[in-house]
Image: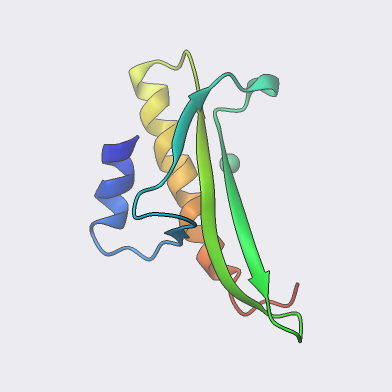
Length: 92
Ligand SMILES: [Zn+2]
């Protein structure tokens, strides 16, 4: 997961920053409902309701995934990390 994140983020791909610290918080946890992963973002809006900041609180990846699925899940969640950036300037 770390290496998958760094492969994309380190390559200069746009990506929302971690909310705290310089590294993303990645947890490997049991997730119900068959989801492979979940990305939690935090948005801050200005007085006009425009989103002015987005950051990644944490990324959860499901336990018990095969190597292939783990990679797929990691890349999938990275998309959400990048996606958080595109929320900027939208009206909440
Ligand atoms: Zn997803």
